[in-house]
Image (cartoon, rainbow, N blue to C red; front, top):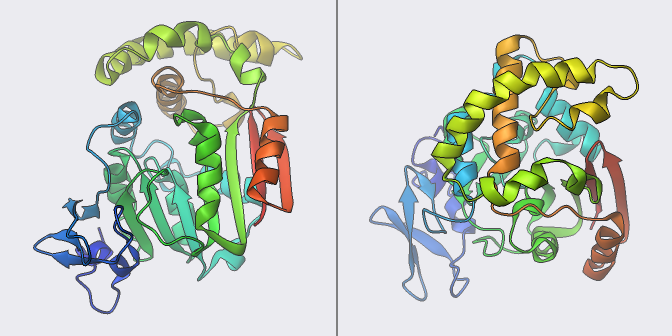
Length: 328
């Protein structure tokens, strides 16, 4: 990565960002030693995998996400599509501006292939981004040009980062796919400083549970990722034209299209048929592959925000998502 190649783990004495990382066992500082990160207190060590510090096993419940994002590293990047789809989603959902993010510290939780990482880095923010899966390598390949990116592989439940140390926190498309959504949600706020701003989204219940994919997911989530991807790659392009035709029907089209189990991004006005097909395959796989998918109700989210002690919170519906934003 051009964080000056070894820069992500602190070989550059002018930019030793690795010094912010903490041992998962005793929370002491880490240092670079013989090509890995070593705890200065308890002698625990953490590998550096292709220049990315890793704090989780190579395999996890998110294996499917790693597979999909390494297959579709470029698909959703604004710099690849030529459209500000990811930028618009970040800025419209959060209400933030590039000007206010410049120079601030941002924690991105669950980066995938880095579509939102790219947007955040372009603002000039100092972005610490992580994912539990091997998608971090797709992110590194996609966003190697940014010197303000700090990338690591870690779990939300066990982050090697100091608490209350970030000005902004963003988490899109993640928490509904974790083993314990409430624990995930509450854990995130440990890393935002008092007065810091946040934006998190989650699938909305009950509407998400009414989607026909939930009839198939008990089977599909057990299929190995590579095999499932091959199935989706064959079927999605065949179902997409039917879905597109139904979507075009006035008033009821969007509801009828939901009966066809394929992702349809007609509303994004993607530039060509190939882009439509690629996004469809990617997101159809994303529907069927995750081990966990747990949409949440507004009432439950409101209760959690109160239990965390948040005083300035907005919970809004954006299509099939709840977007929770505000100030800690």
